[in-house]
Length: 59
Image 1 (cartoon, rainbow, N blue to C red):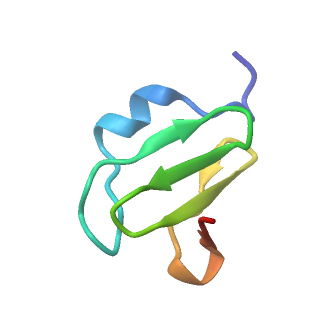
Image 2 (image 1 turned 45 degrees about the vertical axis):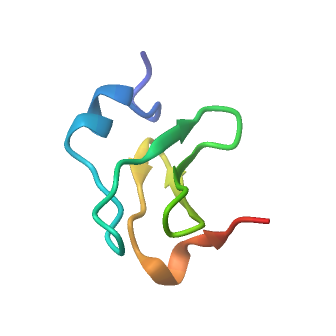
């Protein structure tokens, strides 16, 4: 695994900052998805950006 790849084991420790619910990893889009908040957080250089200002609203 390269240094810039997201480690899915991190999901065990991460929750949505808005709802505190679990997140789903979307490997194709490199995002962590919060269905309860209807947003997706980007993963940049293997690091999840868990800021609401950076989140993308889901369609």
